[in-house]
Image (cartoon, rainbow over the protein chains, first blue to last red):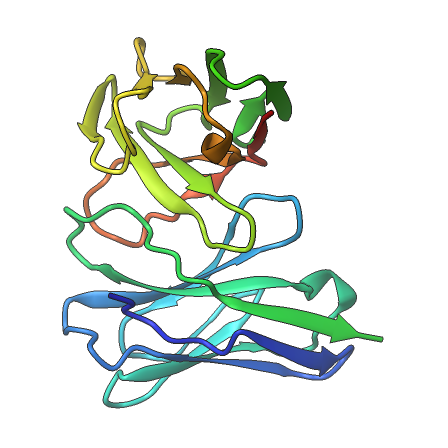
Length: 112
Length: 116
């Protein structure tokens, strides 16, 4: 039973913002939203996580709706190196459930 | 600093053979995870270690799969009597001690196992 739903693929233009949606309509109050990405032939890489407030770091911004049923990962200025599979994952705050449950993710292709 | 390393990067074996895959976690990370990734799919959890003990091995597909971490650092995933369906990329990750979520997992580059 998938906890998150993401579009299978999307394209974006180099230098433009990439907005990656994720639905998590069954999220509970004690669960974070995490984002990881996986560049071809590499292991997954942590990007960002949040609970209910918007978050920003050097890689991306995470916007979580007020009802927490969906979120958007924003890559502000996409580069060719951002081409990857992006995974949205829901994970408990107090973690007895430490494993990351990856879905199929969104394959993002950044085009010059 | 050094990240998670995995050896070998590629392993080709024949059906029925035994293989060992090694993971060197980030120094000081007490939590270690193994995942398996089949082509076109996201990684799937196999087993989790906290220190030397396997805290959760519920993801291991059957008793041909076994993993150890005898000194709480390096871990070895062992697969007996390999089958063609075992072909996948085996990923290792490590993190600081489990507890409050927010501790990101750092992944190695994986070992690509091909069973002929």
